[in-house]
Length: 276
Image 1 (cartoon, rainbow, N blue to C red):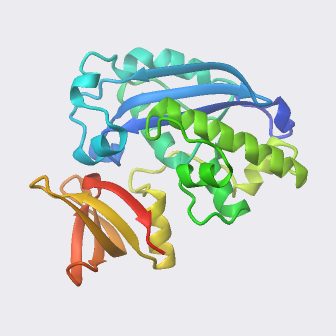
Image 2: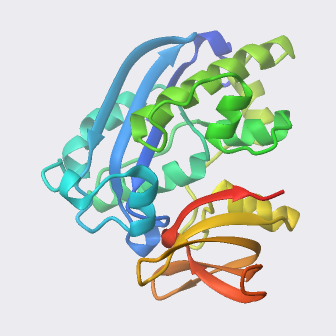
């Protein structure tokens, strides 16, 4: 897959903004893509877009449904990822991929291509989450909070094309602002985000940004959690670590409601936000 040279001026780079909605949090535990959206743009102008629901071949977890609202019956007649792989590859060719929390989307994308035995070498990637963390001081770096902070209306949140459109607007803002700071080429932008971004290795777990930040800063999170008996509760917790067991990811945290250490299955966390 060809990509632009690092010396290319930013206004001459074709970007492809990507978002995937998934059945859960980790492709290496069997989770799959259930919706994908891509939008090509250059110099702020849209060049084309692609969107599709995807039949993941497995059920959508309660936590994923609570976030994206996609039901098993919504995707039962949708194409398999193998059926849409050609147009997805075409959208990515000779472009720079953009996503918010790019390792997450890139990891699922690479896993889907591997499953359908389609060669995929990731292009250059720009992560708006990395840029938000390294270049700005938002109270939270979630896509919705960054957008609100910049006066951008986040439309159709947690659906693939809605998040793509929001990410594009965030990217447009960042590029204009960073150009004023002397960031003028693709290489400058790549250096600013901390270097190249590749799909995570199998043993690497890409965590939701809120959990990652709470672990790093020893902060608190407010969770909306659905138990195995389908009861929903609000919990304020202090995350301690994330662990894997039986093909699932679990957050181990000090629960302030129970005043004891508890374990929460990540795919049953409906919503989370910083409580700081």
